[in-house]
Length: 509
Image (cartoon, rainbow, N blue to C red; front, side, top):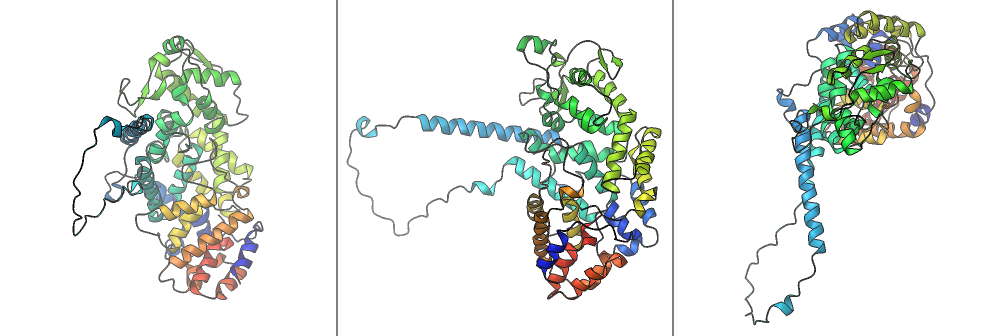
């Protein structure tokens, strides 16, 4: 089968006829895709293999003590480095503007003419100094971003099944920030994921919510550094006002969900409660630059009523108490259960699965390890056909695991692929994150780009081996007769591998 024919077939929505092979379910639905040799490890007990991942200590963490991640910085030093670089860029712009505005010097009138003797031309003139190559030293933010991106790809490739990494990506998209928003986020988006998501991905939801709300990347992403209580000292003196973005998105997107029982009055009250949550600036007047600080002068004083409960005045503790209570609301349990079931089971998940997950969430006080274990245990996760489309990051990770990690210590190609597929790393289109349904990724144009990427990846593999053997190693008995025939008829090993990377069984989860 020619590649153009394969592309045309993939432009058609997938049927729900794929057999739910338990090993393929473990790798594609819950994990990041099999690597050659991986299927044998799961064949006896796919559920047990996934449960074992949940028991591994610190499995989600990226340690700065690991030499493989030596280029990473915590959010505070990363933001400080960005602040320093941004200040130098500002000084350079001012210097260049001043130089451009300087009037031309009339040197011919100001300096008497002098006769200068002609110097002999040297026998071997020295070469002119080469112009400075500004691209050789990328901006600080770009260097930080590439190091963080490489760490994320490396973590995905090294994972076993990759269930916990999928959970990290789910929660990172749930509590998303965008590098397109602000230079602070450009410097700290990767650190935000490492500091506010990874430590809590198998912990309590309330703890993750608090870590997210404290993080400078989220505060800047949703403009809380601009929010000032109208009756606070800063509000009265500077005539600055309330910004409701953080309060609204926490209620609407992160916890209760649309229709979760809150009102506009609750949004405004919550925004007042959150005033004063900000980041120390470069001058260090409020604290260490780049760190979260509570600015009491910007905090709205007094008691506040939220969702029918009164929160006494208490500075930063007022918002922390509110966040803990919101995390325990029944609407929050239902909202999180629905999103998890949609992500891991089906675009339209079974109501029974949502109900069981919500019950576990409420019963365990938002224990995310228990919630992940409940996902593995429910029959719907293993009986529902693999009909969801892999997101771009899922797809690129699966390709790298199957065909090789790509250029060493250089995430550029993988990042370029993500951009081409419409899911640039840490740059979602809005605060609701990237889409989680097939409609967001299964367009004919998207399939064309995936085909191009599959072909590029296949051409980079030095020793492909037999593509039919790779099909058995990655997909196994779930491979359809059509897929087997297409790969068997490939005109080259590279084409056979490209067809495998574009097969419906490889694309779906």
